Amino acid sequence: MTHHYQPPFHTDESFGDLLLEQLRRAPWLLLSAAVHAVILATLLLFVGDRPEKARSEVAKVEMENSLPEEELIEPEIPPVEEPEIEETERVDPELDPTPDDHDETEDDQDWEENRGQEDFVSDKQMDSRSNNDAIGLLGGAGGPFGGDRGGRHKRRKGGGEERLNITVDRALTWLSQHQEADGSWDADGFPARGNPKLGPLCDGKGGALYDVGVSGLALLCFLGAGETQRSGPFKDTVARGLRWLKSQQDAEGCFGSRSVSNFAYSHAIATLAMVEAWGMTRSAYLEKSARQGVAFIEQCQNPYKAWRYKEADGQNDTSVTGWMVMALKSAKMAGIEFDERRLAWALDFIEEMTDEESGRTGYLRAGEVPVREAGMEGEFPGSESESLTAVAVLSRIFGGQDPAENRMVKLGAELLSKKLPVWDRARGSIDMYYWYYGTLAMFQVGGEHWRRWNAAMTSAVLETQRADGNFCGSWDPVGAWGQVGGRVYSTALMTLCLEVYYRYGRVFGTGR
Image (cartoon, rainbow, N blue to C red; front, side, top):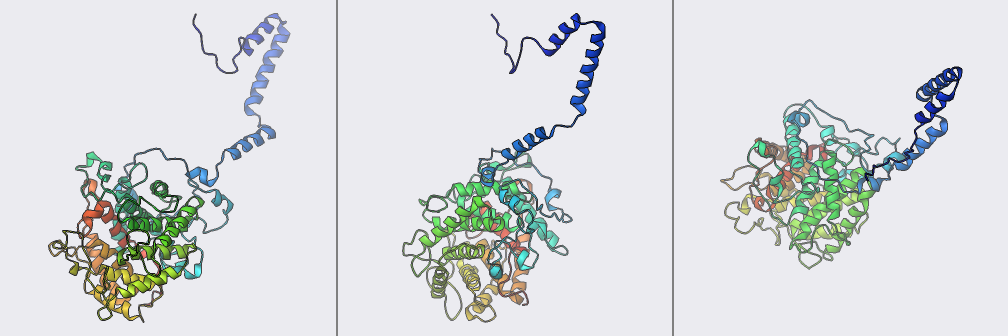
């Protein structure tokens, strides 16, 4: 016997069958009346308004189906391929998109509660507004800083700045296209995300253990350009990245595996990104992660000293300390509480590492030249760099030391001015880590020091961005640390250099 599926609410006799049977038995007069009645009922059904009760029931269902903020962002995003976007969509210098203050694609229950507040989803969401000029992270030079902040949304035009904007857009596009489906940036696996139709896939793999660190750097590039998980053409990229980064945090707040020998680097950078994202959006989904990341930084610091690779192991170095200082300073601007003596201890350690005569800051010993990865000293000598001096100058200014008055800041700026960025592989002068910190430091110093540095830096960076096939928008991972970080690392650092103009406000004003 064959069984047929019966739809829900199925009956053996339809309404039409019953009506037809009744009509057969009715006089013709009644038949005419019945036909008119059916026609009238049908017209009322299609043109009549829905009763108020029905409308209220629909509204009730729609309200019940809206999700609170954490439910909107928490579910896993299914793997999707980034669409191929024509370059003119993101790099046309005439485009100057403005953020949609009513974009509710992400965790925006709190946005609904603050719909009337102008700044709620802008990049100006900051506590402690009187201190915002201390660092440009968490809002940058615009908003309360009064500059050109807004990243890609409010960038300056004219002269060479249009080319700078195009360069940043290409870099963001490359980073977005090479993001993994789970939201991470794979330091050694990213080439597989390229498009074979465009030619050879990218080379320049980095260390397999540094995904957390390079993912944090990549996210900082988008945040620095004004992109968040709520607004901007790269909001999906940012949302996936933040969700993945949050998933890499353990119960004590550490980002990434502690089995990595120098995990403190990755933790500091990831915390910096998470704090900045929370500071820009005040998303409840990110707040706990940001606060726990900061708390773990405190846990890792050596009492009365600084940081190195692991948790309070008694060792200290200037490089890791620089990343930790940036993360803590950002936390302070975001209103995340911590023991501020920790910043003072870090500055005391930096003083210990600085030669009083020259102003040079060393890595483990006062005044030593920057160290190099084993085997790289011959090709990229430390004598061509002042990377740790740059870290020290930036840390001092963020700590409140006026570059116009502090002797060590002045001496450090002089040293940086003598080693301006030059892309010369034969000379061994390429050091992107140095250029990143040097750009941040010299922008804060301002004046002639900044003008000279800026001219050299923009030339070195703009002229060397790749423009071909799958490489388009990236920088080759050459230099002292390029082989360790890889192409994602190098591209992120160069992008962050170019974003300093609208990402940071000067601590001591802009008059110099």
